[in-house]
Length: 394
Image (cartoon, rainbow, N blue to C red; front, side):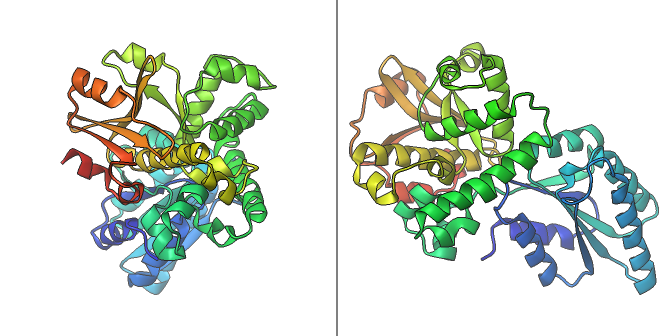
């Protein structure tokens, strides 16, 4: 199984040395595996290092391994070599060391190509913009799609809606207790501990964990931050919660979608709609089994809407699409997408939901490029989960 980014990285590494290739994405989506597939298929010497076990303050480690790669090139009389560094964001001032070594190779005309991998997009982006401007290209890897999970593990659409797109957990879905334990212990805790708490100043880590767990439960629903504060034990304030939501978004875990409005101030002051990046996150904290949820029309409808939202936001950044919801009194549109100067309105309708007046009202008020239903009496959920977001704006 090779993800779509395989072709992109392969093509770029076959080009003349021009840019550092930066592969970013959440944990356990196959970044390291993809790099291994690429280097196995191209005939270029390569070394792979991981900063995972290196103390954060020892950033000089970068210079040490870089120099060893130069010596390997000299010793073997190589004209080309690839250096891969995983979990680069863990090291302090990593971008300054990368810049120094990259610029030295450029000056000395050394054909040492570099690939950086990172799971904390927030820290990666900060380092890139501060020190490496003009020297890099970013390749983004999101969570696995329905097609990828079906091709690799035989998931049907309902299995994907509930269990989501984590390849490492796919073999455990027949044992839901074990699946939930793996999700919480091996995936969620690692992501929060390593990608959030170790790379971003978080003054109330217990509050962030509570916020994440509660927001996953409410994925696909509107919930005010003030209401959330009343349900959290280690209470902070609305600004703190908003900042933590931003960090979770940057780590591709959870986002609070804002209300669509022409006025930007109204967008940012709206009640957020919680949305996980992967439905596995929503259900890893649940207590009801897949069969229980699937047989309840109301609960399954929430699962479907959350899965549709996850599919949208996973493609949003790579396609430069902005995602909102819209609501006016009791009328709503589940997702509003903006790109290429066009607006697309999407209402998700499962068996238990009747179409409200939201879609026709939105169409009348804003004249979107497209407005349609996903689910009952509309585009099938399976067809939509196989859709490239760019197709909506063509």
